[in-house]
Length: 162
View: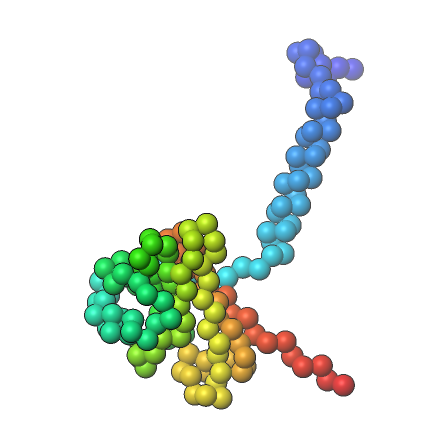
């Protein structure tokens, strides 16, 4: 008996079947890797209508020098607000502030091709408001991805009970 494909004169070749199997296998592997890989705890979007004046006064304490005219605010996470800007060379920068305490918790600039990341250490023992409920030594990672900021909370490993 002939299959419908054979009736039309179209038969899959051995190499065609191998290519199809390889493509399906590769797609499956990427899908599993994506599902098993790390994902951000949240993604922050830009906020419109936020006044720049409070942050411009904090820029004197930031670890990076940016052009204040390029500042863009993002949503707040655990009381921390990331801002993007550019430096004098046009490189993207990320600054994380705590508006409630007027504190700057980190900043970084990098080439456009590199990952722009700012890590903030959370130490409830030092009464950081944003750290409440987290174990000491937790790292909150802010990573610029396109027009959004991914936030991941990395808790320290539990000590071995021996």
